[in-house]
Amino acid sequence: MVTDRPAPGPLEEVRIVLNSDDRFHGVDHAADVGRLNRFLALAGSAYGPLPRSADLEPYRTFRDVTRDLALHPSTATREAFNRIAARHPMTVEVRESAAHLRRAPSSGRSAVDRVVGESIASVHDAMVTGEWQRLRECERDDCRWIYYDPSPTQVMRWCSTDPCGNVMKVRAYRARRAAGGAT
Ligand SMILES: [Zn+2]
Image (tube, protein in one colour):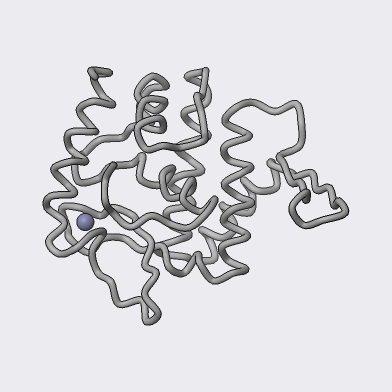
């Protein structure tokens, strides 16, 4: 397990999606479905597997728009995110207790639609709680990993204790595993 800085609850799934674009290693784990599914499994994600190559483009589009929304929000980025969200309606059911509230992407959709739909709901929730503002990009130029900053004053600058070199080594190993499928 990489000892970087995970996000709380369902926001961690979004963070994993964002980090499937591993810029430091020049690796896009969403280059093919086998690779993406290995990455999600290694990261401990509840998402996936995505069964079809046709899933990759909507996955990457959502990921890249959402990364921009986290790091460089602009009117154009918000509009792009909202266009994706409009194609992923949610079903909400209220029950007798909060523990049984149910919210899910509307039925009859593909695996990638469920991943995107769940992620959109988690982004929304994180914006309401303020957790969204705590997703940050590692300031090391050769890292750029997305991490969660739980500090009260949000002063963390790196994805792990400085330097984050050891974390990056582990990540490189995992990237090779995900790419090659070796165990
Ligand atoms: Zn880093």
